[in-house]
Length: 373
Image (cartoon, rainbow, N blue to C red; front, side):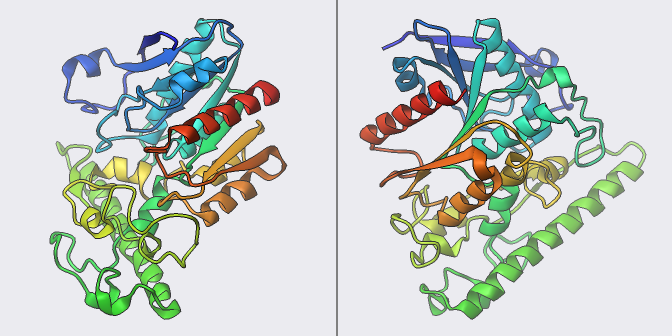
């Protein structure tokens, strides 16, 4: 087993109060863990917008196969309440620069789970920088030098992006944004009278109501932001809570978008997660909501992937409870003739309790990276 090393990387300052740590705001740093093989030919970064990937399951297996793999954290590790996807791009770029400083010339990004859309957004901007402002209009301060292009992207258990997840998981039965319990039974997927299985008619009403709820939230966000910005002495942002954000009928109706999954959520009982105190997009700010969860987010995975020109490798975990055949198809359409898919039979979202599949994934990524880049 290779020695695990710590990367400590200085990054550019971001938005005010993006951290409660004064030291982190005044001298912002990000941290990564990596294992180096003997030869310095190919390196990989596996990164998520907010999850701690310093203990990622691919770091050691890829090093054993000749690829330096760094699990890199963003400045928002552990909390996405004020996360700006555009700022995470700078953190990822700092990681790419760090690996180049170690002598690696060929670098790939491994977009695992929510890191897939991040990797795609990064390379799209690295090839053609278009972001000049944040979604709310504040300067982004992104420069071409912040985003050195990479040589390929591997996607595994790949979500399409936070904005896509949000609208597909948002509970449309919420009748009061200030009341986590109030529900319209006619739109409640967890109400036994509605299913599972779910009728075509219920699903159509349900999906339409999900989009309508997101639109109501977005309208309120934009209105609140405009009011703050127009008020002398007011803060430029504010926090709020979005209740019940885990209501995807596919979690409990296995006839929808069928794969090898078991019923439930990647975090356990789907209804319990929906009502939990902490879940997808639960705590956020106006600007973070716009950047991550809204229809105005620039960080959609497939649309960004289509703008890139590098080789792409897709690994579909067939027993995943949160990515589905339609997710795979969206990535394949975006990658066109640059993408190749490999199914990891029986793989759950985290490959939890599946060490043999971790080895299979490492073999596949290493073989692709050493051939394709």
